[in-house]
Amino acid sequence: MQYLLLIYDDEKNDLKMTQPQLGEVMQAYMAYTEKLRTDGVYLGSNRLRPVETASSIRIRDGKTNVMNGPFAETREQLGGYYLIDVPDEQKARHYAALCPGAKTGTMEVRPVWAM
Image 1 (cartoon, helix red, strand yellow):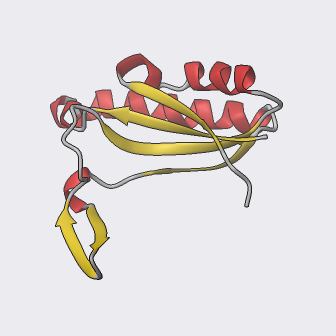
Image 2 (cartoon, one colour):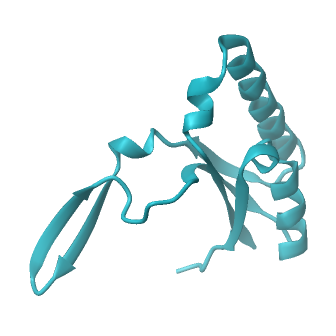
């Protein structure tokens, strides 16, 4: 079954990091990605651009409304994701807990509803 591992963290933390610290974080994510590949569960992943580049679209009464940024104000923003294929939610949670993002932010584990 496919699961989406959503990585939430405060984007402002990245701005506080030094270049060596950012390098360490990137190395941790590369090692994590390699672990998923080696284990044969990796389907895809991407890092998202900062929340200020996002827009939210709503259609109400036939009118399209475009808003800058995400609709909800939160302390943590969606920063990226991993798509994995594992037998069950317990295994998906296992891999979510291994993600570097779990140490500083929140990992959301969401089953994919195949269409």
